[in-house]
Length: 79
Image 1 (spheres, rainbow, N blue to C red):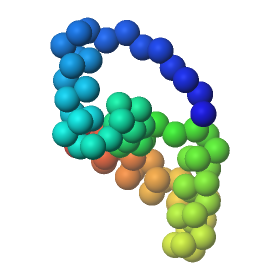
Image 2: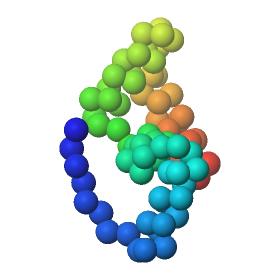
Image 3: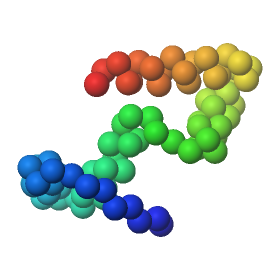
Image 4: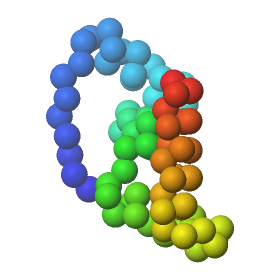
């Protein structure tokens, strides 16, 4: 697993630390979940998602990709 160093304001860091304690999760887990929520995935993960959607729904490649893009945009609009 890779490591990353980021710079946060003291207030943001305290809020993140409090949120992680309240949820009984590490700061890394909260950040990872946030990235998932925003749909940030590797190209391979995105391809796998489309492949699984296509296999499950019997859609063609273009149709499956269109559905995946529509759903991703819908999730992003909610934030």
